[in-house]
Amino acid sequence: MLAAVRIENLTLRYPSGTVAVAGLSLDVRPGEIFGLLGLNGAGKSSLIKAIASLLRPSTGQVRIFGLDTRTDAAAVKQRIGVVSQENNLDAALNVRHNLLFRCRYAGIPGHVASQRVKRWLSLLGLEDKAEESVLHLSGGCKRKVMLAKAFVTEPEILVLDEPSAGLDPGARELLWEQVRIFRAAGNTVFLSTHYLEEAEALCDRIGILHHGRLVSMLAGDQGCSFAPGMAAATFRAVTGQADTDEAS
Amino acid sequence: MRFVLALLYRNLVVGRASAQLTLIRVVFQPATYLFVFGHVVGRVIPLAGQNGYGAVIAPGIIAMATVGAPFVSIGGQVLSGYFFRTLEEWLLAPVSLRTLLVAMLLGGVCSGVINSLVVVILAWLILDLTPSDPAFLLLAVVAGAFLFSLVSLVVLLLPQRPDRGREVFSFLMMLMTFFGCTFYSYAMLEPPFSYFALLLPTTYISEGLRAAYAPGQPHLNADAALAGLILIAIVLLPYADWVFRRRLGNFSW
Image (spheres, rainbow over the protein chains, first blue to last red):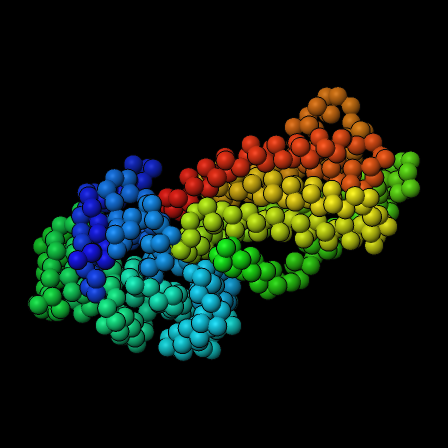
């Protein structure tokens, strides 16, 4: 079966010489929720950027449904929805336009885009903020808009970099529900998170990234659920840290 | 193509959202220049011809719009892209880097052409000046706006941080405005300044526009001015493409 995400011997080296990811290989199956855990600076965001075609591999390659992120970047981006760790909303636009233009950039016709935007604004409780500049939103609301942007183009793979950071418990629950619905439709999710309970609750498999290397891979019972605390115990064992925030 | 149009439309929406500032920049600022240099300063600078100094300065003020507007358009995108990470949003769009480059350049060209045509209308209203060769004027404006869209991209994306590029552009603009025949025609210059002016692209835009307004008045050869603009743009295009790919192909901002 063609992997949804195939990472082969990937190394990401910044111009400063910092090696963010070193010789990483990994396959994510279609329909799987794959979680990446790691301390700050472990290389999670760099890996996410490489999957999203924002960073070029120094060596190795990343393939999305067989498409090389280096040579087929446009086709890759057509199939993925990305939530970056940092806010990348268009600060000159309001909430509705941020979502509408996301659709327009992806070539979605105007009337379809309007319907989808309306649906996601309603789903995330952002209807009353639709005409507000994104500059005036709270951190949590900005995060919701970023999530809506990732979903609104109806991609086949969601690439989420700490998606629930800054969300209140209700919004986090809503996110988890949407991720599960997304997967139930046969789609794939690749997410990095700081929250061990989020990884355990959502993911089929969890990879632990440490100093740019994949040091452990955990699979849930029958590929679908983890015993509570399993990921935490393994994380402690391989990183020597009690939780993902300790090194920050 | 859809992405290019979407980004142009986005620029329009952003411009409309800040309509007052846009109006000041596009209309009131050049109108003030035209009035002051055409009617106030023009009276104390005796020059032959129907419109005196106004006929010399108006093409220069149009040229300033031609070179300044692309920088406002592209600079706004790059600076907001850097400080608010909006560039990441565009880089995540399912298009090639070259399409993004084309969209940004086209945005710069459109902005330059529209702003320049507004000043052309203002020059007609304030100084009663109309171009003798409107087609050549349009050609010079398009070529100039394209060239300065390339310059804007290079200057903003070459340094590690685009805000440093903004400082460099301000300096270059000052140099090119004062030495590049915007406030006077090339024919008024004597060596060594006339030689130096030939190195500055604003000279070719201003002189091209002077040729379009008053072919009978002394100015740099119109064909030479246009050829100069196109030549500089051809030389700069691959370099701008390289700078764009180098900075955004591996997006580490």
